[in-house]
Length: 318
Image (cartoon, rainbow, N blue to C red; front, side, top):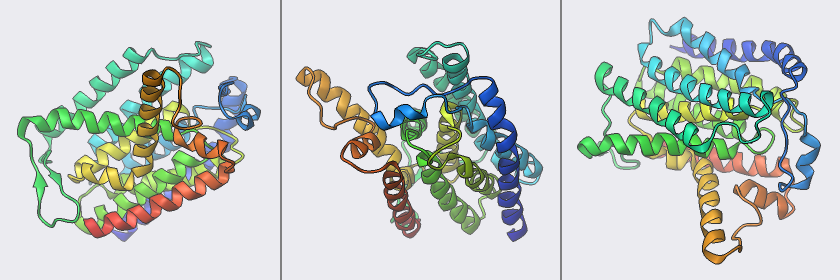
């Protein structure tokens, strides 16, 4: 067990680190640079041209590492599928935006339809080919699970797509989504090892791959993960939680994801209701803190500290 954990982390970290100097110049030559929103924080305009789609780095690392263990640990298959499935949706969106130069990328209905399909395949696989129950463990109440029967399926769609889009909104500052998710992945790794759930190779691989990616993604970032990476990470978080019957724990360890997506919903709703007024200076909420005078690195540090503390709280609730 200890050997598997160490090998998964170190191998995925090494692959990510080695791929960085190879992939980033390639993305730069392809001119797949990020175009910052003119209505966004002014300090972000200097990031124009920074290569995006860097999520390929940790996706490849996780896939290679996971494939080495998939025969012995078959329970990682649905997690790998959901991570790759959403990563592919993100890749298509990034490709359309930065290569085909269509600023909107995939249309909203196209992205949502693809997310429904990928989530549907994941749900079908869980129900047909695994013994994983869709009943959800209640935090801090030993042995208690919420089971809504067939309503578990629409709940699964809501949680998976919500987690994925929350992670997507979190990816707005250098190293933010990476830093938050590496802590969430570490939490899942500890629980996976403690419960002998059989998914630790992929949770460890995500930890290692993101640590390697952070070498290139911390401020000032030399590459952004793009939707390729952020949607993939959301898929990983949701799938891992479901494989351990812990989707309710996403609200605790993934509080930052929830905060980001709720801030956008509140801002948009309030703007429409009041005819142009805003709750926050800008949404998602990490931009609000920037416009309040916080540096980018401070926002990332504070959000990461909050996530680390909440992961400790969640461990007490397992």
